[in-house]
Length: 241
Image 1 (cartoon, rainbow, N blue to C red):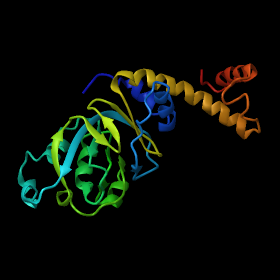
Image 2: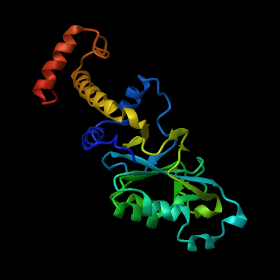
Image 3: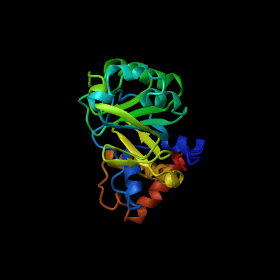
Image 4: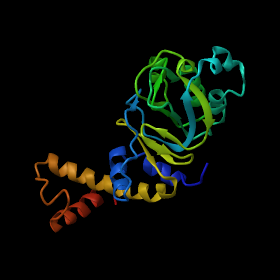
């Protein structure tokens, strides 16, 4: 893992939305960092933040993927669950195919107990009601009861993958909220987190003004200098400076 996710950066990312992060990334020319078609199993969880640790599936071939492969202690899926570092986010490339499960509640429970920050797949989880009840962040496309062996063959651990049409490199910073999951290139995670905190403060100010009846014209964006002065006063009054 890389050293781009400091405690300070993690704390900042815990308090910002994936929407705000996507805008900050778009300003840098990164348009496709939001993982498509994944949803939180429990939308009441706080933000999920961690560096990516990856697992790649390929299509299963029947002669290589019988139920007996799980007897092998070196099976890539089992190894990955035991090797994913505490504080990381386990990201699974399931080829956007939720017809068979990427994992189930036992493996996800093991990730949770080991201190992993969360798990994301562009496929599905089996035992999804049990996973949703865990105090743990998990994101998938939709529930899927069949075992992964019927469709997916675990192959590579901690290599670059695609997840929901997003390229994910090991060590990239992964942030999930109640809307979904965004991937931040590791080298810019700190600067993105700082900008996102600033953007969040301004958007909270704008929301307060709009709810109080103010027009968005001249406010969002703040083309009226008077609104910048109001924002400065609002930050001081609300301890957001």
